[in-house]
Structure formats: structure tokens, C-alpha cells
Length: 317
Image (cartoon, rainbow, N blue to C red; front, side):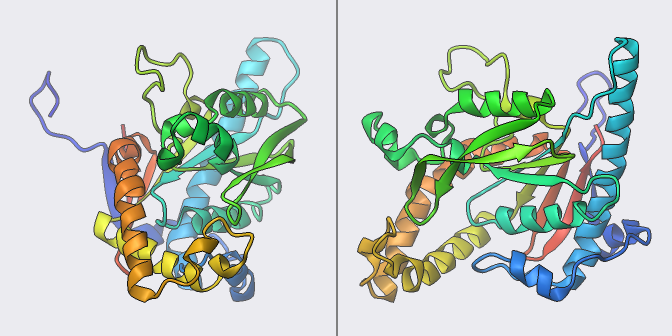
């Protein structure tokens, strides 16, 4: 409700799959089924139809924004009488654990890299900016891993600031999902990308970690565009448990896996462990931090029970 006029309004225009697909406007499909299969996650299967109906219109929208942002950047450079720079366009992707952010981000990266305007598209996840397990244990935060306070926010801000400043090479720490920890001494170097996709649970979150005063700079200040992958809590819970069961039969069997101690549990026991972790950590984080940030996204992609995107919400204010 607008307090001045008394009229109701929505921040988003909502499109169903067919309506959104009509906005593709002949954007070519540049991925083969073989290439798409290589991008998929543990559970999520992305079809060429899904790419054509959802991803291609989105890539067209992002390309239009990218071109406009580059023009505006040139205007600023001209006004300041400085050489025209090529600062990366940064896209933030947020959403819950197990909602399919990683597969979505990889697929979007592949499509955007095939546009002639921006062949260099880098992808970085916030996992690398988690504090090492030793630090989390020391601070009593191990059970809140993935919550905002478990990240090295200063290092994350410095990384994004260097990216937006157009620094030629910027390094990001590396996280091992198998070891469930930061990999000491390892980093990935990002070299002058046209676009950077920055994916993580809490990238749209605004609250200060100290809760004493609002932070002067937040992660999303560096974003040119933001996306939120959404779904019903019950569906995300089912996807999380199903993924955990599959990992227990595969990855957890490896002695180097952090979760190796779950390798001999039967199906019912594994499900109970998964539900416990989901309720105590991931659902709590979703409700407290992740879901409240949804309304800050430029686009919300709402998934159905079958993991397909059923609605696209485009922010209009």
C-alpha cells in the first residue's frame, strides 16, 4: 500500500513460462544438450526447452542491461575527462541451499559468454569467503555455517571493490565441498572479465553483522543486477534431503569427505540426519536471512515442485 495515495501496488510484474518465453525475441540457442548436461548439478536436470523458455529471455534482458551500463559508464568517464574504462558488470545470484543456484549460475554463465558483447564471463561463489572451520569452531559458529556471520565479509567486500574498480587480476579463496572447508593457500584468479556472476546464499542480505548500526557498504552495493532463485520451503526441503541421500551413497563414501562418518547409515537414518541439518541450520538461515532478501532482487525465478521455473518476477520499482 502506498501511504501517500492509498493505492496498492506490486514491486514485480509476474510472467508465467509462456509469457516469459515470448520475450526471447529470436535469441539463438547456443548450447547443445551435451554441453548442458555437463553443467548440471547432483539432482537438477535442465532441459533445452527450459533454456529456450527461461534462460534465453533472461540472457537477452541481461545483455540489454549490460550494454546500457557500459554506455552509462562511458558517460561518467567523459564527464570526468578520464580514459574510458571497462569495468566488469556484476550479477548477484541469491537463494537457499539446494534450490539449484549453482546449476543455474553455470548455465547462465555459458549462455552469456556466447553473446558477442561479453565473451569473458567469470563465476565466483561466496563459499570461498567462509571463515575456515578452525575459526568457526573457535567462535562457536560451526553450527551456523552459511549464516552471514560465518563469512569473512571484509575480504568479500575487498574482492568486489577490486573487481568493480577494474583491477586487472583479482584473487578469490577456494572452498572444498568434499572437505567442507577452505583450501589453505589456494585461490582462483579472475582476470578482467566483462561480466562477473557472484553466487551465494546471503549476497542480497543487508543487516550488519554487529547489529549495532547499519553497515556503510554491503555486498549488493557492487551488483549491477540481482537474481533470486525461489521455491516453496517444502520443495526445497525435499530437494535437500534427496540430495543428501544421494551424496551419502557416493561422495560421503570417500574417506576424505567431511561427512564420511555418515557412510554406513541406512536410508531412514540418513533421512533423519538430513532433516535435522535442514531444520537446525538451513531452514533457520532461509527464514532469518535469505528469504527476507528476496524483495531486493531485480528478478525472482520461482521454481515448481519439478525443479522447473514456473514464474518469473520482474521488478518494476
